[in-house]
View 1 (cartoon, one colour):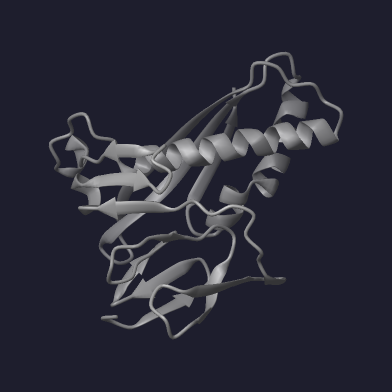
View 2 (cartoon, rainbow, N blue to C red; view 1 turned 30 degrees about the vertical axis):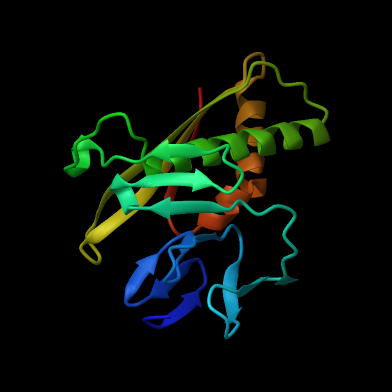
Length: 195
């Protein structure tokens, strides 16, 4: 395995590069971290022991996705359900086209997870939600601190029939509970808007 590979909480350093969420080995096999960090690495390539703040996490489900060609390549899940071409957006100097991009995929995953967290919180509090819509936006821009890039997230939440004060309370509690929110808290700017 080329390069040194170690982890700090909520970000990963590999071969001198800081990467968030994905950890790579020489064979382009991705590993996705949610609300935990890598604490110990086994000697075998690609095997990672992950521990959280309160001890070791026992995965209930693992998404296994192969990425080839970076931002202008393709992604494919091990079960074949996810299969997309990737294309650099024109705003980032790419050709755009029919391919998706990491920001769209992250927006979809974050939004879906957040809406499920919102439904969970509402159910616990005895609130009936109907026709909820989460409009998830992921922005990428320059990071003046290191000359690289950084992400931002905006979640616009519609909860028809729920009074605004109660909707805002539910939205905040869902943000505290959502695994994606936990994973990114303190790393990226996240804005919640109840509309």
